[in-house]
Image (cartoon, rainbow, N blue to C red):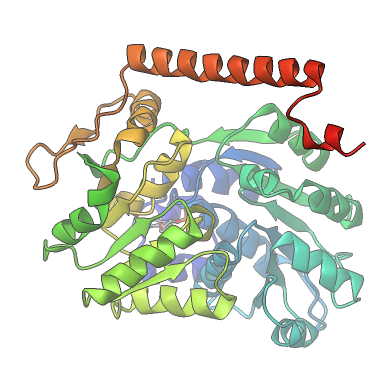
Length: 420
Ligand code: AMP
């Protein structure tokens, strides 16, 4: 299928061509015709599949064809969990609407609201927002949802994980009943299906790539080594000059800062993005990375959600996530839209069990790098050793409680008893 077959407005086809998109992705081929025919849509799709264009293009098509009076009203609302994702969606709307006079703005928390409220008062057609700031500015009277004809709830599963459910419920009460709604989520647990019932009318269901599938274009490998050797192993990996740019994942914010400090000490340009960084710092770091001014960007999972870096080829897991789905999201940052990608993981003995879980989920073995200078010497406990260690822990616990009870009964050892 070609974009020309989708009956999109010619100005949108021109904009898509400027983006060098040749063929629609699977989610676009499925969603665009349904949305153009005014259906509500329930989509299982994750970021990286071309999902944004799948909803942005048909919404823009509708907006172009609608007759409006001169006064700009907010006609489409996209709600998404993170600021980075919101900014990216806003950028995509700007790219796709470049030959039209359809304005969008993006609002999110963690920054002063002045620039956002100025943009709103100048009038926008499309609003992309994170839930908290949206409700806040609605409460202050800067935003009215009365004219919303198109509503997108993006990354719904992550939204629930981040505790946004009550915000979403409040928002739904304010939306006009007569609207087209599009609901996207990487996974579809029952909680998400229940929520979708309160949002959608007779939705058409579409699905691409379950979260358990990793892009075939991503070459995956894993280094097994000791915790204490991880730092040096990272330097060893970075000696490979083919790695012009690499996104490194760290489970914790402190971990991310530590990795950056170590890299900088060794004259490797690096920056971190995580929840403790201000929005400006995060944007600056991301932009320097995109501009190739820094070679390594170290991110935590939440901060990295939705990051879209054109032509990113390398992702490195400095630790192995304990939720296997997180691994799939992480490595999905590279090899996007059919590009080649390389995922490298560093696994310490305690994480071996997580690596096994991942291999189970993705139904493939991750190639272990056999020859590297940092062997794994801290052997993880085998099943028998684990059992014995558990037994020993229980024995000590029982002994502790038995002694405590004995002392209590005899009135000994508890200093409080002696005060009387
Ligand atoms: P998304 O899933 O919306 O975050 O999109 C992931 C990446 O794919 C972005 O860099 C898009 O610009 C790109 N993309 C979206 N649609 C297409 C397409 N039809 N052909 C090539 N790249 C695309």
